[in-house]
Image 1 (spheres, one colour):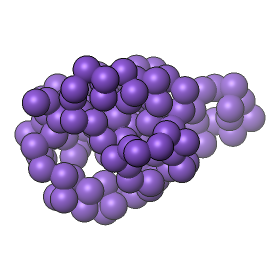
Image 2 (image 1 turned 60 degrees about the horizontal axis):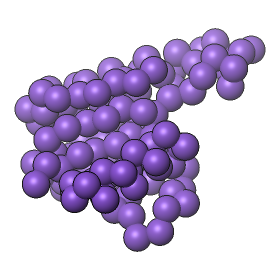
Image 3 (image 1 turned 135 degrees about the horizontal axis):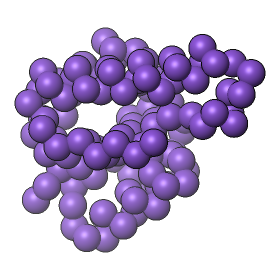
Length: 112
C-alpha cells in the first residue's frame, strides 16, 4: 500500500484529496499549520517553515512514497505583503524538497 503525505491537508483541495485517497485504500497522512476539520484523520499540525519539526516528522513517519504539496498562499491572501508570499510558498517548498531529498522520496506532486 502506498503511503502518501499531503501538505496543506486542511485546505479545501487537500481535505478533498485526503478523503478520496483514503476511499481508494491508500495510507494517507496530512500536515497543515491549521487544525484539520476532517474526523478520524492521521494528521500533524505544524508550520512547514519549521524545518526542525519537518525533519522530526519524517524521522517518525517512515516509508513515505509520495508527497502531494498543496500548502501555500495565493497572491490574493498576501497582496500587500510580498515577503509573506515568498516565505509561505517558496521557502516552504524548499524545505519540503530538502527533506524529500534527505529521505529519498523521489515522487512529489506540486500544485501551485
